[in-house]
Image (tube, rainbow, N blue to C red):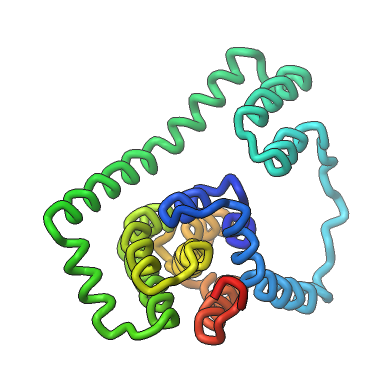
Length: 258
């Protein structure tokens, strides 16, 4: 799930990271994919190896492929409105809901994002108050006084978004909070904005994937009826992704963007 969220063009973390750094979604995707693809391949191989002796269930429900179409269209075209219209057409056509049920589903979706929208607006407003009162300049000075290279600047961006994520337990809010600071650090030390956006996204996802009080682990633990802490030793992909992201900073790859 974190692999998909990290690379998706319609992910809130991807959109936030690129907006705060001032780069294109496609450019950030090119950088990010080169960092996380090796991690995904290793994790995939691990899952195959561990699942060799696991027997698949015999009774599998049939997939209603027509209901998958709106998701595929959104992923290919990156146009959410088209996905909304198609989901309504497919829902009405298959009898899943009527016209009013479609409106109700959209309303539930907006309500589900309401808390995140409010927190995001509060975080953005708080950051602007801090900037107005000179807090951003102070934090930048404290963060960058020992930096002497692009490598150090990238490490400081990674550390900043990771610490904020630990405190907020929300990777989108962490990126919004750290984004303006990362933009200033990247500009000061000549870090490619596409690389800084990628660092924000990968390290926020890495941290979010490991904290037992994050929404993702709490949800997974609830579905499995276990303690979130019991999941952590098996989170191969977040661990490997974090290692690959750190190596990309230390060994300067992808070379073109470093």
